[in-house]
Image (cartoon, rainbow, N blue to C red):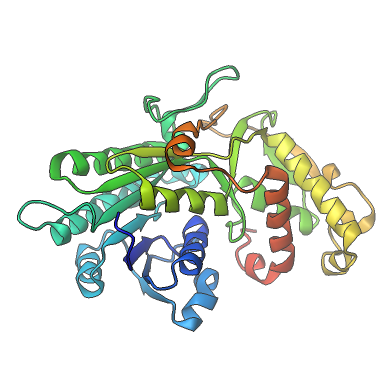
Length: 360
């Protein structure tokens, strides 16, 4: 895509990964016009964008991506030339108990955005790929699951989703590809591994376990705790998307991973050990979080409890990020230990943010 000032629409930009991307993009490309479209469900929060909204660097619109008239209005008013599509229902447990919302948002919502982009960018039945870009953010879960000795997912791995969440994301991926092949829409796509970092809603493994620990509650780990995930610091995910938008080939998908496989139980034990060290390094945390085991001189690992496994719990995910590394020069900037430490420090410093989001 031509290196120039952009009018960029970021859907789901008040959520976890989306808001981190908005901050990343506004720092790196301060001349670009950034429009954030977010429905502000339970996982979306304007607090995530407060500094940018106050400075006027970002324009925010609260709306559902399924509302075609509003989406069309946004494209026309702001002359959108770049879309980065994060908006999605993404929690597997919620997809099991309420799959309908996942189909509406992830499949139909993506279709609405694609239609709006096609209608607004078409000129004489063709679309200038140097002027426009639609980037779709997907997940490694569309590939299904791996066994211990299986090779990591590549971009050629057949799709085999196993939950309503991953099935809905797979459906949206296919729609994106179809708009490229059928209409020539200039799309790119990325499939990422498990993200972690600031603004992570406390329902996923790391933020839920951490906030429980800081409140003196037990940490529940599904099953044996030996399920394996590939972890990616959210800022490294943003870097990968940036490279794809700048240098990625139209119609291609790129896996973005951290080259960082960990068993769930090992993730939580590392988190506990890091909390213990941070409480020793800075005694102010003992005063701020008196209910935490670390404040009482007790190892945080003592809070770990193993609970009944969830339905459809995939055994292992692992991303082979060789393509984006070789073709676009991508390399994660954080190790898991450094990224996790930064994440924990952010949560320690921002209790006013996460305490308003705790699901008691």
